Structures are given as structure tokens and as C-alpha cells.
Amino acid sequence: QAALSRENYKVLWQYYRRGVEAHSKGELDYRVGCRAFDDGMERKVIARMLASESAAVRQIHNSSGKARAMKYVNQMTRRICEQSRSRVSRRRSPPRQQINLE
Image (cartoon, rainbow, N blue to C red):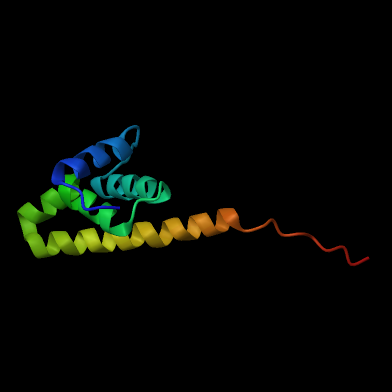
């Protein structure tokens, strides 16, 4: 995936955000990021999408600074990718066969 402009990240956020409901800003970031990851977006793209459009990131940046905001983006992106990978691997696992020992 080639480098994208800030406007592209905004469009991606709006696309993956559509129809997602969440009780908190962090939950919204997680759900939107998972949708993007499950759709094949790279971790770097998800991180930039969050950094560009997340209300939680904006709030952290305004109250605690850029370093804290970037730490949040990195932690959230890591969580999204790790948990999405485990969901995908569970889905792809073949069904376990029961062995009849009679």
C-alpha cells in the first residue's frame, strides 16, 4: 500500500467507521481498526488513520501532548492487530474431530 495523504486517512476512517457503534472513544477506535485490519489494511495505515481521525487521540493530544497520543496509537494498533490475528486464526482452524474410542 502506497503512502496516503491525510485526506485519504480521513476517507478510510469514515469508510470503516460507518455503522460502527461503541460506548467509548477507545472502543470505537478498536472496532474501526479491527474492521480495517480484517479488510487487509496494514498496521501502519491503521495507526495513521487513528492518528489522523480518532477523537480519543485528539483528546489525549490536547490534554497530555503528542508523545502520549502516539503511545496510545501504538498500543491500540498493537492490540487491534494481535487480537484480529487470533480471531482470524481461530476462524481458519479446522473443526476438531471427535474420536470414538469404542
